Image (cartoon, rainbow, N blue to C red; front, top):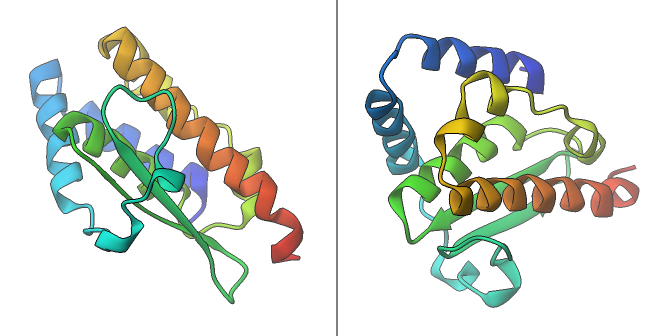
Length: 141
């Protein structure tokens, strides 16, 4: 499935909920479904700078040329946010990740409904994932 198709699916999923408390519950649920990361990956090198809570994001470029992410956070909403990003970007080529237009963030209303610190954290997640994509493009070729 393409990055845009996954984004469109998320937009549709979020459209079923009118109330933002229900949308927050969906974000928390997505975080609970995020596979646990290996304890050995809870290292400073994987922490995303700019997030108020701790967020670990571990990239892995596999033999298929695709970049896969595992992630975790010590805060439930933030874990849900990083799980959204992993769902959208993981399993695609580094170039696709680096070039992705992540329109779902605006369309589901995250920017206007997140606190400024969480919104900054989300932007830091996006930036870090795209940087991994840029950095690993040459290795995937």
